[in-house]
Length: 510
Image (cartoon, rainbow, N blue to C red):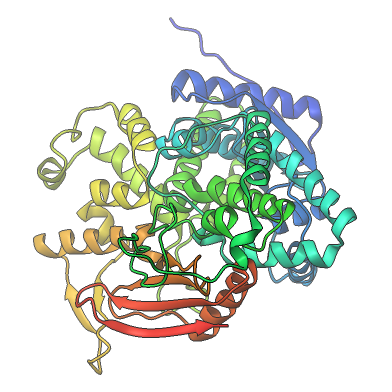
């Protein structure tokens, strides 16, 4: 005979205490580490109020964020919506840092605290630590130190130069934030202290080499002078053009900014770079965290560690998170990244354990291998949304989510269904969906191509127009005004069609 082990539930009811949280955390950690084999940073859990959660959520999810009026505006908007019952609050916020900090809302019931600990402290935490984009572009060990430095620096600038002057620079920098990242070179990872030392060294170098006399000397073109990239006015300076990181270029070469203003740009650029991996992994990051919390709470229920009532509350919240509204539903706002990511990861588990003949044809390397944990951890480590969908979206998932694609041609009066559920259609849908998550396609390709530093100092930008989709004129012109403020002189923007290389439009802000 074998003895049956009956375990007492970790908690009974909705109320929580710190002792209950600690016991439940330990049980979650055991399953996460010994069963799933997750590799995480040390965890630091913080309990905050609803107002603090609103404040943190309004500040780009960073409780240590520097102050800016736009965060207050978002706070007021979200608070009104929350108080009127139009929207709910995030159950948690998690920071990609070492230790990994999770902010849980004190109003959460104990079942929800269980859910969010599994979701954030282990799901997101594992993804942050192991995904190649986060390893390449962020330094989890120094981000909190840097944000603390940034917050103090902005406050110091407000004292010395006044809030309006500081906000003017931050407003302009925020308008360029999506174009303030470096996508291709592999960056070094200096600590916050090393970064500040480098910035100080750069500032001293600028002061020692700056010569203001060139401002008053008329530009002359001599024989054999090298022309600036694509510019017929004046000799070239070493600017490594074209440059896609607009904030970095302005920070490095603007003729009018003072050192403290350049440092503000550097801070905004750092924050933009910090969020760059998250913009590319929304489906994978949330899918990983959702899959992890779903697996862990089910294992806890199987072990008798949580009650049926607690499980029902957890599943109700989980179902709300992964709910996918139909295209004709008023709540439809595109594909839910939680639903897509979680569905694909469950599908990978199914393919590894119970494959169908179709799966064996599409996924020969993993179909029936049984090691779904290893396959998922490999995907979490080595893919981003676009490549993950291109590699793992199966015909089964396409049918389950009823996906199809439409041709949207501006010259045609009607949409045309271009792919259906057949062999060719599955591959076409997968390709089109993956492309919609490719950040290089979704975001406008705008680069600095010239700066007439020896003439009228016009800054020249080029927009590579894809699929004949232009920029919104209103927002385009407003952003160019901000750019003109930072540069100090005229800014021109030309749109070039990617396919024909013909000029689509040209505008200038003086």
